Length: 77
Image (cartoon, rainbow, N blue to C red; front, side, top):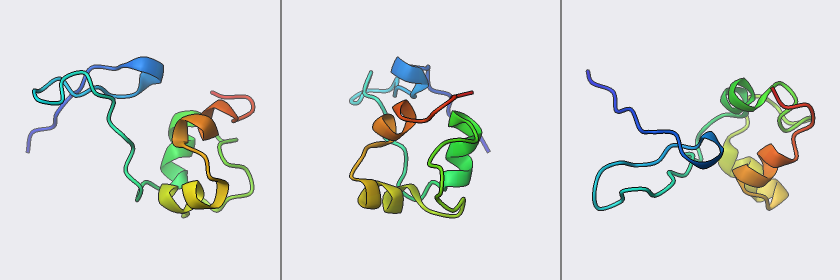
């Protein structure tokens, strides 16, 4: 099994290096769990939200993008 490694882009987000999407920032999947995001953005990411909540649900509830949620996280890693 091979794994793709994409170069880091703006704010540590992954950029796709292959055409036709070369340089585009990849969006985090909606089924990513808050638990996983806390590993990346710190334990204070989305306080008061269960760790088994999906990112898509969190986006619906808050009306915020992942970038906005991460930016508003107090005491990041």
